[in-house]
Length: 213
Ligand SMILES: C[S@@+](CC[C@H](N)C(=O)[O-])C[C@H]1O[C@@H](n2cnc3c(N)ncnc32)[C@H](O)[C@@H]1O
Image (cartoon, rainbow, N blue to C red; front, side, top):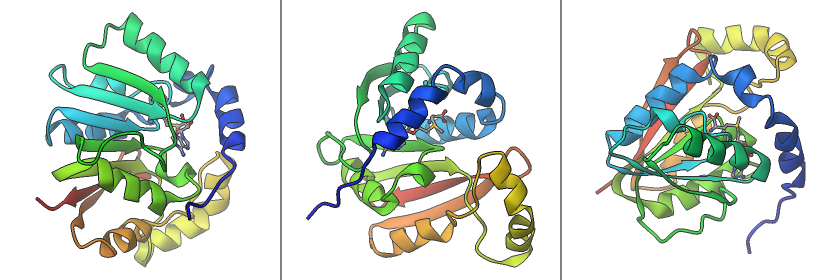
């Protein structure tokens, strides 16, 4: 039986974020967003962005792509629709309200799925990854950009020391990178290809998870 979550709180939070989100995050997230969009485009033209928000990533997809965006929050989506119109982003198609854990698309619909700064917010990230795997074509990739906490070594110790400071600015180290590899390990057709540091100074990471052909 599917687990039910109360997503109203998430929607309320992003209704407040929508008017100021771009001003706060446009520079901080740009490197990861641009890299995620380009990595997705290298897999093929049909791309799904999960948690498209205000559409900050949309201009980074090359013109030959066909990008579909979904998000829980109408307020964030409204900004994405405005961006698509104002900037004439022809690579952007459907922008729709949807939960990452219940994607209304047929199996094997997309060449790549981008998940920029979203996975740590989803109450059931493994459930969302299951859905992404379902709608991803064989040979395609799920590309995740996020604050992914280190699992071991000096990076983990530094992060643990800085955790209270990081929390003060609204980020958490609680979602470890191993959560992605543990999920992939339960699916023989899914493999974590790479987890690499991105701006600023590796604070964020980009993970590429590939589905076998
Ligand atoms: C931090 S913003 C990231 C927006 C955009 N991807 C970016 O990089 O600027 C997180 C977005 O994820 C959306 N979100 C959170 N949980 C979600 C879920 N379960 N399904 C779909 N979208 C979700 C929020 O509404 C919000 O717009």
